Length: 79
Image (cartoon, rainbow, N blue to C red; front, top):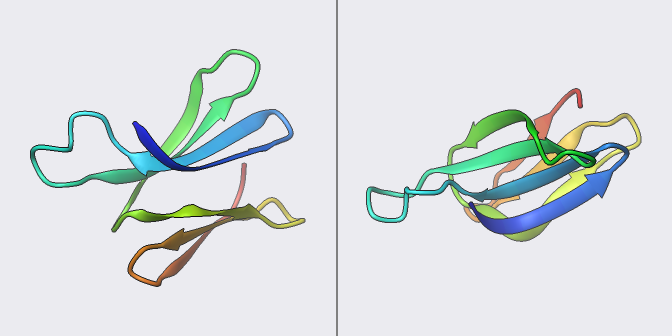
């Protein structure tokens, strides 16, 4: 994955990036959460367009906010 934004909070690292292998066959972007201690992925959520560089935030309730290059703002609940 080519990372556009990384955020670490608690035991999870979140990354918004272009998925590996997608550079030649049309872009495919995703938001992923990884276990900080082991680096294992917890979940991956496809994104409809490229994430903006440094466009990640987590609010006090644990919701993940992702800003996309097209100007959209996505909100994901949960960890």
